[in-house]
Image (cartoon, rainbow, N blue to C red; front, side, top):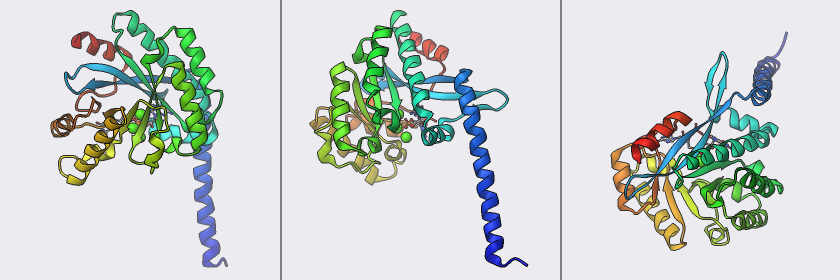
Length: 277
Ligand code: C2E
Ligand code: CA
Ligand code: CA
Ligand code: CA
């Protein structure tokens, strides 16, 4: 007869096995998805707060798995980060997004920039700068229309490396936004050492902006600090008019969120650009 702790162990390991086999299946599918190009990008517009014009778009990856449907990046990006596949996926995103932007520029929307999410592993690879440089050469894209979003957490991993990488990227002429700002416990003293161009206020602060006066104080403070450091500020996750109005009053430069536009497939984004022009 098994004692209780042995029984517990069996249940525990059965769960672990199930989880592991699920993960392995997903990993195999991910590899296949990359080979068969089951990934696509959606583009969420960024609006300037003064005129509510589209000034840029953020590329957001989607995984369209046949027979399964759309799998959200929240599900597979963490797995791809764990097994290292994120680097290959990230290369694909960078190239795909730059080529797409070049197309829009050639169609006459030449003032729009693209913002691309860069995973910590991409950023920690010394080769990353060369990759960006060669994609810029290949697509003949003006570097100032490419913005890289790096999470606050990723910048804090190795400060020396971050300062070095950001310096090299800025020399190429690309822009750099700190994503999810306010959630990564960054030491504010590093902000002035980083060659960045934008802070992107995390949506958790925007969420209950109209009901929580503390969040109102936080967004106000981030916006003021960014401007004092000569940085642009974007707020993400704007879901209603109240949030929009508060952020405008506080002088936030660019706004993004479902209230303004969902992330859109390529064709729908083009339609929106046509309407807005
Ligand atoms: P993120 O970079 O912080 O992107 C913002 C997420 O919030 C996106 O989710 C977007 O669709 C969603 N969002 C936009 N407006 C609103 C809003 O008003 N309210 C709410 N609640 N959410 C809003 P998505 O597309 O599911 O992406 C989730 C995360 O996956 C991203 O967070 C990013 O960390 C990661 N991700 C997406 N695409 C890529 C990629 O190409 N490369 C890498 N490394 N990560 C990516
Ligand atoms: Ca982002
Ligand atoms: Ca974000
Ligand atoms: Ca996020």
